[in-house]
Structure formats: structure tokens, C-alpha cells
Amino acid sequence: MSEALEIQEIQDKFLREASFNLTDLRNQVQLMYWSEQHFITQSLIKLLPFGEILSDIRFYSYIDYSLDELISKANQTLLYWRLSGITQYDGTPVTQLSLFYDETFLWHYSAPSYWEEIRSQIQSGHRVRFLS
Amino acid sequence: MEFNEIRLQTNFNDDFQFVYTDRNTYQYKFANLRWQPIRTILSFPLINPPTFSLPITVPNALGRETEY
Image (cartoon, rainbow over all chains, first blue to last red):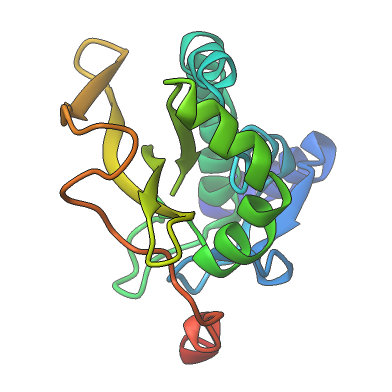
């Protein structure tokens, strides 16, 4: 058996045993992205507060305590991409993916639901943020 | 990661509407293994900022359909 085949078998076995919990981005209609590969780990997407109206407290809590965990979860996704042999159009391994929240959902669903709360917060001098 | 801010703008009915402006961008720098804030700090007021962006008024019917 060639070394390449052995490595492939090890990768396949690892992939099966690691059982990455994946999200198919094609089903996440609130997100926009431009890629021919569609999978990231669920744990990563759960850490991204898309669609959330972020108060000062929530925002700084996220910035102070969640960003480092994002690196860990992003690395899991990167590991999955690498082990699965997912490549870009030019054949090189996928290393990044940009995700955007579809503004339709923010301005037509999230923001109207919290209209009074957002207005009150801003009128009280607090900043209200969202991940774009 | 890029965060924008919602602000209030007085409209013709003397009521408020949402607009958005400003942004905080955080990039992870592998050189020092830290999140580095790259901020655009604007000292505009939270209400009636002189520069702002209007939210979309019509749902985005294109978006992903152009990709798939």
C-alpha cells in the first residue's frame, strides 16, 4: 500500500471518529457567502452573533470573553476542511471563508422586534451594535 | 469581525427611524496571537448623526440566488 493511500485512510478514519458536527451553509438563508464549499462546524456558527442586537453589556462581554474561543472553533473548521481535502478553485486548500448577515433579516425582522428597546437604549446614550 | 452601530435619525414625521454608522473591526493577528481592534471612531452623536447609512427598505431578493 502506498504512503499516500495510508495517509488517506488515516484521514478518513480520523474524520469518521472525530465526527465533526457540521452546518450546511446553504440552509442558513440568513447568511451570505461566496464559496463552492458549504460546511463549517456548528460550534463555530453558534459563536457568531449574527442577527443579535448587541447592547453595551452584551457587546463587551462578547469581545472580552468570546473572541479567543472563536479561534479554537475556527481551527476545528480549518482542520475539517484540510482533512476533507476541500480546495479552492485553483486547487489550493481552503483557508478562509467570509460570512455576512443578510441585512434583510436584520432590518426587517431583528430590529423591528426590538424597536422600543433599541430606541430607549440610544436615547439613554448607549450604543447598540450588530455584527455585519 | 465587523460591528456596526444603530443610531436614530429624525424623519419628516418628527419621529425616529433607524440608521447605521460607525464600525469596530477586530482582526486576529497571528503574529502576536491577539485580537487587534481596528476602530473607526467617529464622534458623531447617537441621534441625528451627520453621516450615516440607511437600512435597506426592500428585502434582498437577489443575494444568494445570484450565487447558486
